[in-house]
Length: 135
Picture 1 (cartoon, rainbow, N blue to C red):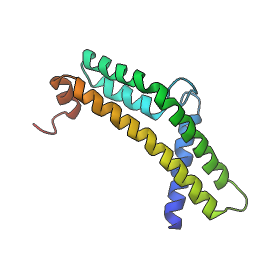
Picture 2 (cartoon, rainbow, N blue to C red; picture 1 turned 90 degrees about the vertical axis):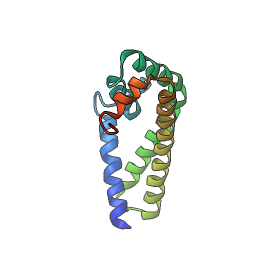
Picture 3 (cartoon, helix red, strand yellow; picture 1 turned 180 degrees about the horizontal axis):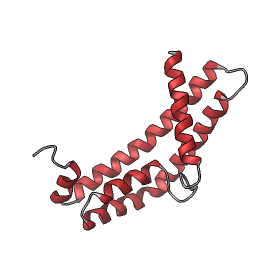
Picture 4 (cartoon, rainbow, N blue to C red; picture 1 turned 30 degrees about the vertical axis):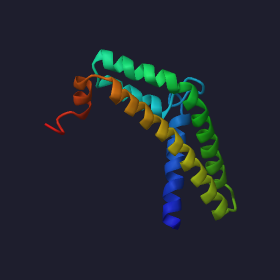
């Protein structure tokens, strides 16, 4: 259990450093992990299908922004808790769990975005995404 807690703290610290370093995250710009995922997927699609993905994503940015803000706050709380001189294990576990729960909400919205995209893009675009896995 303690090992799992330590791994979670390390993971949250790594993610936060990536998000907060220059160029890694720009508040208010819709940046962060979901944007990078959308960019990577869009690069693998035909232009028309990529535009469908971007259109769906832009339609969800207003919903995504507060989820990302809540996650960043929860992540910062977990990091501050981990940095305390006298570590309170229960408080740290609660903070890490809260951050994880908020991250999962972002993930759920990203999954919804991709499912909606897959319903609307061409069969060629779907085949390009999965590559040669099912040939």
